[in-house]
Image 1: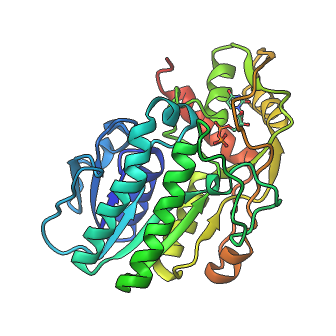
Image 2: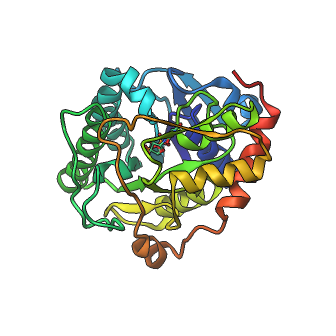
Length: 311
Ligand code: UDP
């Protein structure tokens, strides 16, 4: 297939592009590089089945030739990014999604939306099944991301129902691994970078809030399976093993062997207290579940951060 990947120079987009190229597909990668980086796709820039376009998908997307799939991964995706880029976040989730759907419709292509566990907001149902409608503050600082993705899901379903487009919606839970930005602001990259620099690990709040961390290879495998053999209903892809932020800090300290201590900072507004995917649907529909343990994945990620230049 010839597949358009938006956000191809980002963390997930670049790993997805690698997986598609390995699966013998052709990839047209698009990115405006506001949070993505060319270094993530440097190794494939000369690949005969890869083409890169530096464009903003919120404006307009033109791709020459046939397209069989459109996978929409472009968006600021870290809390500090969407706090700094609120309008771009809203635009890429709404206008960008509309443009991607329009491209898929014009080309007769299958469409996959990268949605998020943030559609569940600060959830009152735990773990979160896809049937849960969520608990989102539309006007809080995270609302720009949460509501953009909720709109994107609604738009995707409208194209499916009204135009008969072949669509997929993946709800991605916290994912980590090589190519996360050192200054991304997310908890895994922050803790590893702080540990490697011998600085205190910044725990927000008391660290009792929980997350479930999925290693990037597992996440991408689930997404590719959903694209290939899933259906239009939203599907959680994430790791169901839940850890508190405090536990994560202890594991990172142990695995890096750092002398760093932890320090406590204030909890960001509307920070979800707990998050864990119910992955029953992905298990039965796609025969998928994560295989990489947190320790194993963290060791690979630590290794990556040891090799790059830290800010
Ligand atoms: N967090 C933290 N220290 C950090 C960065 C994040 O304690 O240096 C916490 C944050 O408050 C949240 C959790 O870790 O409860 C996960 O944050 P992240 O930004 O990785 O993603 P989120 O799941 O909130 O989108």
